[in-house]
Image 1 (cartoon, rainbow, N blue to C red):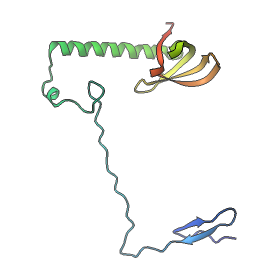
Image 2: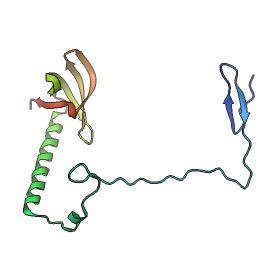
Image 3: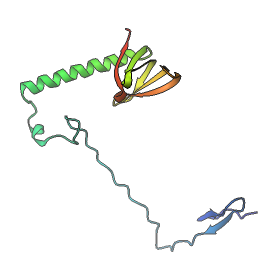
Image 4: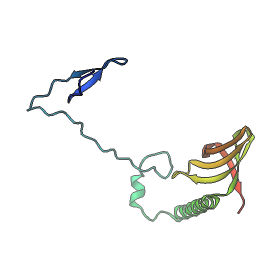
Length: 147
């Protein structure tokens, strides 16, 4: 029968036979080294979507030209309309058209924060019905649903 586990001991052995190895204690004047966590600062993605952070020149000019303001307002309106359509799909049957001419039907459940994936249930594929599934938005060409 193996001895009770001692402080600083770790099991060593194979199979059913287990023995314990005792580590030498540290001297009283030496404390164990604990790694210090370093925070990571992540900057948001820039307006073009490929860079991190924002242009320093744009930060000084808050007003922008009339064309930039109009473009930003149009983008905001389109984003709001898209998010409202996603909210309207929850719990409804949705028809998806995927790449390679694949058509599937499912009940829409939710989407993630980045709207990169759709969670659906009762996904009807050409191979059968899948109870729960996650569809990547990059694979979806179009989707439609009845209001």
